[in-house]
Amino acid sequence: MSFKVFLDSKELEFDKKIKLKDLTNGDYSIISALVNGRVRELDYDLHYDANVKFLTCADQPAAGIYERGIRYLFAMAAHRLYPDIKFRFSYSVSRSIFANVEIGKKQITTQVVEDIYREMKKIVDNDYAFERIIVSNEEASKIYQEFNLTDKLEILPYRPERTVHFYKVDGYFNYMYGKMVPSTGYLKNFKLIFYPPGILIQYPRSEFNGEIPPFIDEPIFQDTLEGSDAWSSLVKLSTAADINNYGKSMQGTNLINVCENRHNRMLTELGQIIQDKIKNIRLICIAGPSSSGKTTFADRLTLELISRGINPVRISIDDYYKTRENVPFDEDGNKDYESIDALDVELFNQNVLALLSGEEVNLPRFDFKTNQRIFNRKLKIGPNDPIIIEGIHALNEAMTPLIPKHIKFKIYISPQAQINIDYENPISITDIRLIRRIVRDSKYRNSSAEETISMWPSVRRGEFKWIYQTQEYADYVFDSFLNYELCIMKKYALPLLNNIDKDGPFGPDAERLIKLLKYFIDIDETYIPCNSILKEFIGGSCYRDVQP
Image (cartoon, rainbow, N blue to C red; front, side, top):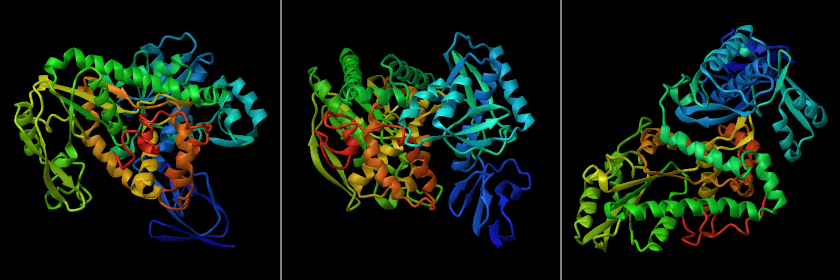
């Protein structure tokens, strides 16, 4: 029976099945395809009527497949050169992957980097096919042992499936928990950078139109990532299996308490730093990307300071929004509420300076229903009372240009997770925040998962434009990640994600997040403290159980 394929405004007809890659005319810039809305590998067989759209690294789903292939390529090259060495991957500075020795005593040098790079290029030049195979869990265990993939053994008991998927390339076996390119020849575009004590792997990014972004060192960001990784390793919570084992053996209670105690300790440390410098601190600025936990963190910091005899006052930057007609447009022609130009920066600075001068100020409150400012909060502060401001622009000097720098204390907050499914498969910090936002938006804003995911690209553009670079100017970075949180979020997020049409435009995102969450066990949330940052998303906060 014949079938039709609609591709690039063309209608093609076939009387036998055909692989997607056979329709690409050998174009290796094409990484995958949307077939009737679903992401498919190029080795996928078409045998039915279908609308096909080819994807390159400029498209997020294809860029994800490419990045997965680069991790496989590096792991394969490293195994060929150093079979007794085990690298661990994590997402790192400059939107890259950091590879560091996890098992073995090999010291990374420029020569090691050059050798791995040459081996990767050799594998690419040979254009080996990625052969997908399915084996039983028992057979998978043998393969894991043979190729020094023993870390993958630990996650096997937590997988619901009785079979394991592998990709075989020239006799090498590995799996990166997702789709692949047809062959190694597709993976030509990558860079390796010696970044002691490991190696940075750069690859094309969709937000750079499928190109490798320029390298930008971010020492404060890197230091925070290293701190998160060191703590997770210290308490043995670096992988999904580690977290599951801990949660299972302790019924989740100790797991929750251990992670929450880390946040408590960080708040105590931060409170001491501010107390020691309080004579010079008048403005405490808190910023971070979406779903970082800024609201709850600001509440907890306020109480921490009060317990030290410091009495901060809070001012919301959101109350300084301009009326809708004065908000600028973004590149898509929509009102850009993420832009600093959507805020009345002049009035904000006038009010803050007046407060710091000891004057009584009538502060605005922005009513989002009427799109108007209401001036109904008179405030006067003491000579030593700091002001806390919180928002995406709080660390941006353009937000507080009239406030002297030496009286500002800047805090950046974000989940800085450094955990993995296994050593070659790091968990995306961005996906953790997206899961948080999906759950929060459903509870507090009555938004579907599709609505949240549809807005995510715009949110991300605003973060890249306005937020991420400000981390390097922070006096303190607070890691809001809780290693147990995916064990809790699973219960809330999976029903929302499972309601997404798998053939719709947000099916690929839902599929990715569902695959991630299934590797974590459920734990009892009874013992999550009411002041936990997680409560900002799942509800039950002792500060407020309303929309944050």
